Length: 247
Image (tube, rainbow, N blue to C red; front, side, top):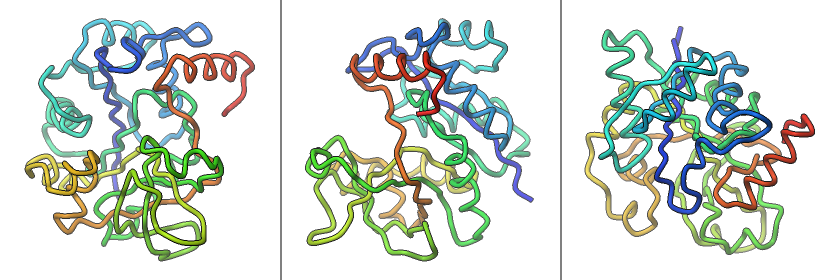
């Protein structure tokens, strides 16, 4: 049986909202809310991987576990790969769940659904998608579109990811939700690969895996919980969690 571990990458030097990992929401730093959600999913032990001693301190004060990693990582995937080698050098955990550190409203059922995708031995990486309902998001380059083919109810095999409104023509567009579930071997292979042509063009790191022939499946959920990228997002998350709502 798979033995997952959840590793949440977090850094202080976020561009649009500096120090957002430590932003206070309903009495706790945002990164602690994310860790609480991940633990509630019950898929495996939860660790924070960060380049900031301040984040380590905040997580440990809240009773969580954190590991300090390099400042030099270009992506969260690189950071969790380093953290995994430190946390689990013996290789016990064969599935690695990468929950983004700016998702304090992530649905615990969505985390479980993404992990379940790896029940299929052909799948290297699991992720999530949700239908786009806001017309403004259809052409918004910050709303990444997942283009895939249905392989089961509420499940797609990803063929491409784009910032453009794709696929063309009538029908729903699927917004990609940046949670990843890697087989350990797939993660280690992925981070050893150089950035790919389409990855650089679209500025989407998951295309590196697609171009390398790795299979990514996506579980479809009804609604995407909004991450925290801006001050307005932070205010919204504060109001929702203040009211004790899930999204």
